[in-house]
Image 1 (spheres, rainbow, N blue to C red):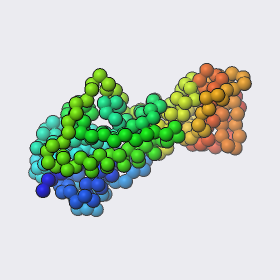
Image 2: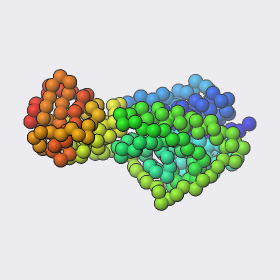
Image 3: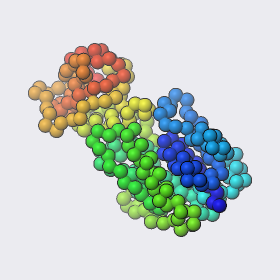
Image 4: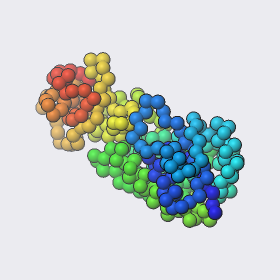
Length: 303
């Protein structure tokens, strides 16, 4: 019997823990985060899943909490997984399981190490991403790769869509490699550090639209942080914050007859708002906002 400890949160964390439970694995402890006040919870609860299956569970702010180390020393797991857990796990914990400690990351490592990998990939217009299972080391997402599964990103797919696709890919990788992991023969392909990219957690500043960008750049930002992601893409109108929730797919050949200041509203009706962007000849059609369309007038400038 291989005893497994799991650190998990969010959709990927829930899906991978569920896969272990459904496979009949011996999960001896689950460690998760308390839900953050004010954060929209669009994903199922890891804590509730553990409770439903009678698995000992600790919800704490981070692995530095003394009760986490004490609990792990007591249950003495053979194998440890981190599935979308939000904090770095210290060596004192990683060294406990003799079969190793492994993390499931939402990108094709070594690209997009760090926080919010799916969102950043969409912001940058990537056409594919995936799930990577890797050995855990103290440097974020830098450990040797066990396995990867690639998923395509369509031009209209949002981070919400892609998180579900990456979650399914993560479960595939976990199921594929679980026998080897339990036998202590997990693959270990070193990452090429020269190809590594790293991005930190997203802030409100990262979600403010720069209307001087191209229609495609703005489109990618809007779908990278769709509601209920926080902070969603936003602009300002007469000093008020307005969330931009959806837009029509940009057309490369679409141009304004008369150039306009980026951010200027050039058309408005019951179906949306047209805003000049890029070099002033390009535009983006906004089709969903956090306020009614009729608060805008042609000539208004968004910030």
